[in-house]
Length: 422
Image (cartoon, rainbow, N blue to C red):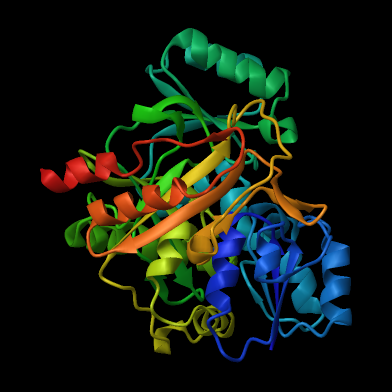
């Protein structure tokens, strides 16, 4: 069976490693992949947003199943285009991927169907947004409507910061057209939880919960990033809260999308805040999170390809989705200076005995050598019986991996350990 995975980061590497466990898989192509993924799949130099070439490749190479992993191609309609050529896919069609592609859409969806989220206002006029800020509660959260590489959200702690955020999005266009419309919403507080879920549009199967670490520096300081590490499961996400989320958020979201004629199939990601008034949705994603995938999939005991095909075929209710009882920790190794300015092109050394537990995100092959080629370079993931052992093992791996300019946080998982002790 020939599989095609669209994307080229650590998330895609984790997906590919898991798909390889299925004995029916004979070939995996990664479009475009990266230098590290090349160890586990055949990389093809076609960009993830080049829908026409992706479809041409899939047809000419007899692809049996496609996995579209990143948000951009999903929102651009990659699944729609592949399905028109008779190629089954994992991932939502464009009309469902809008749940991430437009924050205005998702906020209005939650409001219409009574799904708990932060109070908000929508603006397409900068002067109106600035006028609203004069009396809005502070802190406040300002979001660009469209996709912005996970960076289109600014938490403004002062009124001046809020004004600057509006100016940067709507006037300076730092996020391009994504800032034409913005959402200004209530600031919520409480533990954050990420819950990825498989759904075929009828049944929804949540995966193991996780805790991301977005800030670049130790003790949650510095700039927001795409994620500096994760642990799973999230200790704040108790069975009682999980059941409440299922009844108040997960099932209602699937039903709401169906009611709107936008049936969602694939991986639906729920970014949650556990407030004193109960769990609320911070954001939806239309795909696997990165780096959450790098701790969730290593705990998956069921066959990933079988589950993916069940979401496509509408048979998820009959498909086993089981996870191990243990804990996982992923520590991201980045290039110093990430997420702003950093150098790349440094040779990387990953010992063979730990390579299977390393998910490469930003790397290339140069003169036969694996070199850094991005801000987030790789993630080292360990699975263990306890969270403490998983953290220790992940950092032990990090210390064996070498490249010039390497940077990582030293406190991944510490917040979770403190929560478990309470």
